[in-house]
Image 1: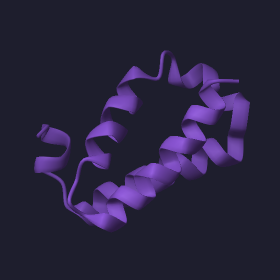
Image 2: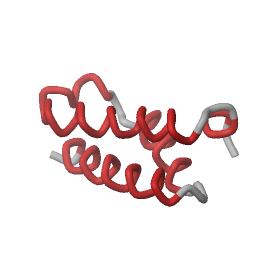
Image 3: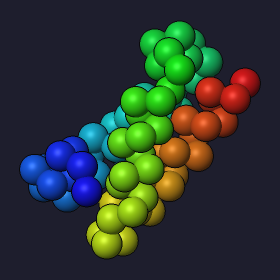
Image 4: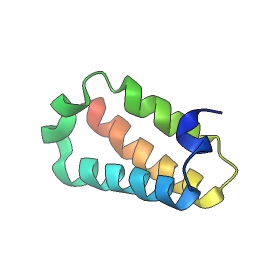
Length: 73
């Protein structure tokens, strides 16, 4: 388990993932250059998908789907 999840409250992590998803959803392709190769964000999202917290997993799955859609355009 990474330091990202270990030292952060699940609610704070969920809020951060949700805000990231909202940001990408609202700004769309205009945000793509800011994400570079997407590896950093993808790593964090993959870690969050592996959590036992169902609410965090659902939020992460939603944000991850939006980010992959934008990054693949």
